[in-house]
Image 1: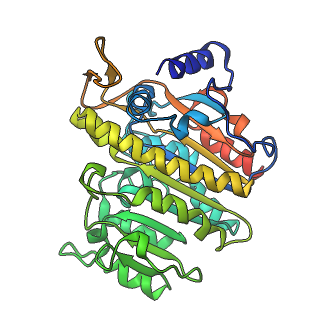
Image 2: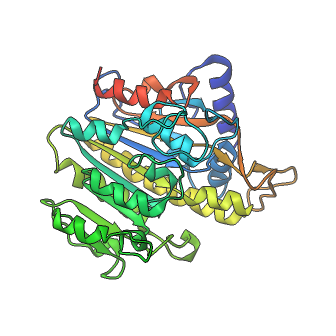
Length: 367
């Protein structure tokens, strides 16, 4: 969409944060202190993915309405091309790390993450993803491990946190295994968690107990595609802020991931990519509805990196987009950042991905 390209070109040239789309109303709290933060990560999502989604739907995307925007530099410490583990670790800790690493600095030392800091301050915390909850992006907000695919170890480290809500796949990694993994689910229930899953029914029908921490598994391993009927991300994005709001008077931190935008990039599948980006945008819409009502919530939308080198090729029309992919891996392209609510103006300009961590803390008044 032409206005999106113009919008982000102005960001690069002028470091301005104003959109050519009509901004959201109710931004009077901008400049004040945020009580809550919702960090939304469209994994693998770059400007072209947003453009394709915008061209494939009627009316503007929720992402087009943000009043402030910027760009971040996603590279890892040891590699110009990052991955989800290092990218999410930068958001979670403010530290650059090596590709494939979770919650450790580049020399292997554990680094405290924003979820741990929030819990220490009495905030409620939550994680929602369309991947498994032990996958790289959510795992970066929980675990401290040298390899992002140590899924059973990530599950075990959930016991060391006090996360109030988590929603996503990966139930199998929390069960007793032949490798000696203890039954993490059983221990969680002992700790007072209300643990449920797709086996008991869809998330939308789940009776909520606001007096207990909640874990809901959407799949044994990875959840299905949106094209295959997965529909829980907007539902989770609607009730998770309300759930967390009731768990702490201090405020909350919530990370919501649209994970499969990246998987579509790996597969070089444009239809898959568009459906996942549109699903993520519906989740963004729900978060913005909460923030507009609440007036104390900062919503940030970004990605850890772009995947696929996706572009819309010459000869495309609105009804027939011709896809171009330069790779089936991550790329080093700059990544968009959008923000709404108290502290949103901090996210204008061009900065390193680690700055997002510090900007969130500044918006929350943690300095």
